[in-house]
Amino acid sequence: MATEHVDVLIVGAGLSGIGAAYHLKTKCPGKTYAILEGRKAIGGTWDLFRYPGIRSDSDMYTLGYNFKPWTDPKIIADGHTIREYIQETARENGIDKHIRFGTKVLSAAWSTADATWSVQTQNDAGETRTFTCNFLISCTGYYNYEAGYTPEFPGIKKYKGTVIHPQKWPEDLDYAGKKVVVIGSGATAVTLVPAMTDKAAHVTMLQRSPTYVATVPQVDVISQAMRRFLPEMAVYRMGRTRNVGIQMGVFNLAKSKPKVVRRLLLAQVRAQVGKDFDMKHFTPNYNPWDERLCAVPNGDLFKVLRKGKASVVTDHIDTFTAKGIKLKSGEELEADIIITATGLDLQMMGGMQLSVDGQPFDITQTMNYKGVMFRDLPNLAMMFGYTNASWTLKSDISTEYVCRLIKHMDKNGLRQCTPRNNDPTVVEESFVDMRSGYIQRAAGKMPKQGNKAPWKVYMNYALDLATLRYKAVEDGNMVFSNPVPASGRAKTALAS
Image (cartoon, rainbow, N blue to C red):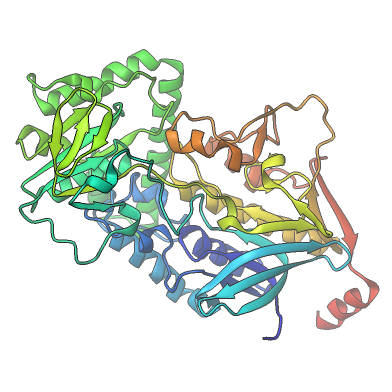
């Protein structure tokens, strides 16, 4: 197949990828672009995961795009409505016509002489194809779409029932009247447990250690009332601003006064599960926001626990048995179905192999720049959202920043922008400052961050908004180079 060239190549047609295409289309309307999507559908995470109860773990006023109001009354949204929202955005803006489905990216090679990325891809039939572009944006998320993470459980081959990872949920799974054990305590587990009690005989959440779980309202009554007399976009922006403030306020309070927030979180659990419930199951040994806080809409998890439809067991697995799981305490949990909600297999940029001017580029040996680009890596951005707030808050303003870079290069007749570090006092640190198991397991697969700007990943929307949307792109660390050749300038002049 012939090589296809576009100005900007976006990898991934999920929430970030469709958003990136919109910002590029509106802020750099003269640029050509394409989206490479390894799967055959729009939606990314929200198309891949189909387990019962799949929903957002943050409100849709902040998880939604900054340019398209979320109008559904539910702000903790079901997975299928989020998928439809992304698909609708793509259709409304003609973005769907630019997607190359079934196109998995294998590698990307930068040539300084040509100021282009050469991207090698493969389709489902094993056929390879090359795309070239002047700027590459990775919107692939941070995990491996092929498989989730499942530990090596002792004795698992003895088990006679069904074992499922939520990332590979079977469409035809019948759990009516079955005893179900969900291994895990994160967002997926606390979603699955209440969702499956409608049909299952009983659902047990088996966790090694507790997680902080907070009740959040599923419907924003303030915004519902305001819709009666204000335009939809105005309501959306006010709801978004309000919820960003709440998120930042809770996070900052948790970091400055962890004991206060801990008491508040445990008190709201106690009020919902009842005085006879053993609180050890929701009393973690770490401070709030050392790991991501789990949210449950309208306390659905606590309601099924109080009604006895579900239970929580905090213990370690000794071995699988023919009938279920034997715990270190000696107790055996019988189960017809065991669900391993044990996390994700983290993967940066979809696993693509990078090189610069013929030399392999190891993403784990570089530092992130402004949470968007990487030291010594030209014309490439990676969308990586917040761990303490909604993903899209960061991906929206990150793509806006990329558009500013592109326009700056065009205005000044330059083709290459490369973050460079000239400060010897910058100290490298872990990319994500969280204790979550899936983050710790993947530390060796991630880039680094620095201990000061612009190399530090702040996880602070207000600070990032000021930096990415308003501060000058020429900051002494972003090096612009590679002037457009005379022939290229002449073509540009003729075109204008």
